[in-house]
Length: 148
Ligand SMILES: [Zn+2]
Ligand SMILES: [Zn+2]
Ligand SMILES: [Zn+2]
Image (cartoon, rainbow, N blue to C red; front, side, top):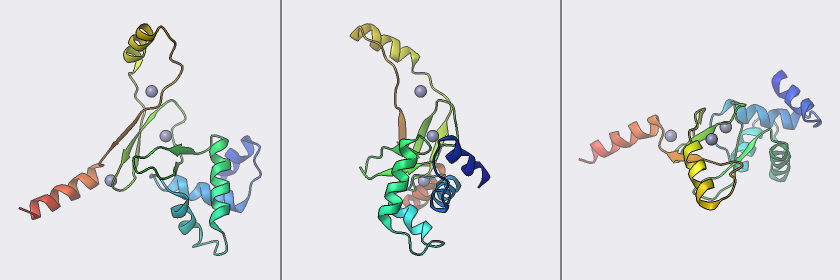
């Protein structure tokens, strides 16, 4: 909780119980969350909180770079609280939305060849790996074994 207090302070954002609760929910769940899921979790403690308030706060936190908006093949809006502060990428489980942060990047070679080919300069990149996590993969193979 104290850590989230400091994060908000550092970004010159007003520390409110709602913002702290949102950060708490996002950081304790290592998975992508839609505003609706965050809202459902919040309502356990804050019965009167409305979905538009959750939308607005998530957007503010994301604009300040405190949480990330994550692209997903299902085209829904997802947010995620990154634990890693350095350059990293995400492995996203398409079944349970679990995220693994990957602190490993070897795109330099591709970057160089694209720069040569296009005679341009690459400044940044976004890489996301989508798949099935080990848990979901195990469940899946159990099921397909039963089907036999
Ligand atoms: Zn991340
Ligand atoms: Zn999974
Ligand atoms: Zn990278």
